[in-house]
Image (cartoon, rainbow, N blue to C red):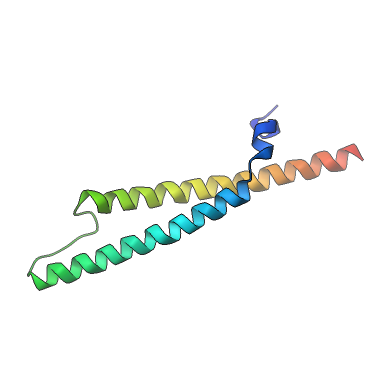
Length: 94
């Protein structure tokens, strides 16, 4: 018996969770790009250089983005595994 057969995993709305992750990924990525552009504009005006990982909040945005990408991948994989398992079980009972 695999963990996909567990009733708790079959009732989770994996598609909805994946969609929520995609929305968060979009806005966090937009935030990373906006922060980089603004940081470079400020750094250019003050004759300095700016990078993507200059402050703690830029690192936090990047780590958040990576975690939500992994969560999105996991939820879409689970959606297709659970849906495929339901189709196989439904076909076997008829």
